[in-house]
Amino acid sequence: MMINAVKSLADRLASSPRRLWLAAFAILFTLSASWSLSTPTGGSPDEHAHLIRAAAVARGQLNGEEVMAPHVVGGIDGKFAETGVELPRIYQDLKDVNACYVFRSDNSAACAPQLKDRPGTVEVTTAAGRYHPAYYFAVGWPSLLVHGEAAFYLMRLMSALICSALVASAVVSAAEWRRRSFALLGVVTATTPMALFMFGVVNPSGPEIAAGILVWSAGLPMLMSPDPQLLNRRLARLGVGALVLISIRPLGLIWFAGAMFFALLLSKKGALREVVRQRVTWGWGGLAVLAGGLALIWSSTHPDNSIIDTPSDLTPLTAARKTFDNGLTYMKQMIGYFGWLDAQPPAATLLVWCAVVLALAMIALCYARFRDTLAIAGVMVGIVVIPIAAQAMQARQLGMIWQGRYLLPFAVGLPIMCAAICHERLPWGGFAWRRLLVISGFALSVVNAAGFLWAMRRNTVGIEGPLLIAPAHWSPPGSWALWLLVYAVGALALGVLVALPDNRERPLPEPPGTVGSGAVEEPAPLAGARAQA
Image 1 (cartoon, rainbow, N blue to C red):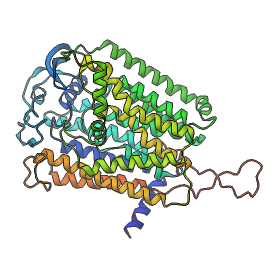
Image 2: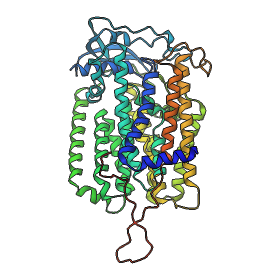
Image 3: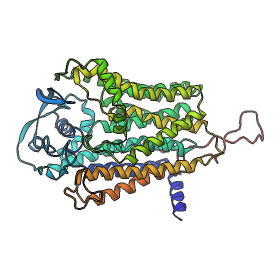
């Protein structure tokens, strides 16, 4: 009976792109908002700097006086070039609110002092003062409406809303493939617990990852499975994803170029020609060029003047070797390393997530053509080589600063692309593919919720505290049990998306000049395809 209910719900969702977008948005926002409301203030990487930057931009302070502040980067002393801005006093208290428990995973967040809204303003410095202001304005404006710690939670929820909308559009793009289950599993796998965690806090990594998921999800079907009826919608999604990705930071240009390179490598003959012929293509292309130009101008006029006292033995070659040795750590960080990278998920989360990604890659390689193999190998090589090259070039100026989440906007393309290749190459019969995919989606749901529980335990009782969290030393608004339940339901719902029915029963058009050949027609797009997703 439960299976029939799930199937009936999946059928209803698949009947309309607008309904599917709303359902996916609700699921993703539930998951992201759970992180927003259950993570203690200051309990995510560099969030204090980003909250200060967002509040300052919302008040029109795009720039500020440069202040050289003592700082430690990767164990190396230096002076960080921060930006001074004028904000309410609570933002000054925000900078040290997590000092008693960050990097001390045995301590819960209960030791943190309570933040109080005090009258008056004061100069506060932020290490994010040179970053592009677009994201910060989008999430910072609620701080003008409410005061105190409530403003921090509202800014988080704004970031969760933006990221959820981007990934919901990626879900609709995936659902437009004939074999939705493969494509949807690719998107669900790309949306790792770490991605959802970053969606729910104030950090530009969140929308950067979400935009990367959308760019890959819209670009691949546009060129691999062209459909004139869907082209404008796919171009719109790709354009929105590109604008967000490019406007976050200069690396976005590289992530977008990488996604488009592999999409072109896998494209069908004539697909690019049809895309280029569309006027809307040139419109979105012009906007992307403008956004890229503005981002580069901003970056070049706001250089990082930090001074890092790097040891003489930290040569580019040494940095490259250390980065290669840290490859496994970066992989874990892409799946889930919560807090200030001081709260690992259970081993099952890492193992199951890696198993699903590798299974998609291995199945795709079994049926891959030459260009498919090149694309899969190219993305895998990029995931290994890009951090090595980046650290080798930056180590002398910035120290060893790389984190796995920095690569996620590109790495999300691996499961999405492998799922697309499976969609195009695998035979319909001969194996219970849908059962395997639904099992994978369910397994990801379970370990996703387990990762949330592990992070919740770290914040409430410390990493060595009881798994059942009793008694809780620190509690989020509501209670830890409430958000665990909400997150578990959301994670299960996200996995259920993989159960959406496929389109293979819809007929394909007969080839020209054939009569009664038994050929089937090309599957129609989602019902109501003219509605904007």
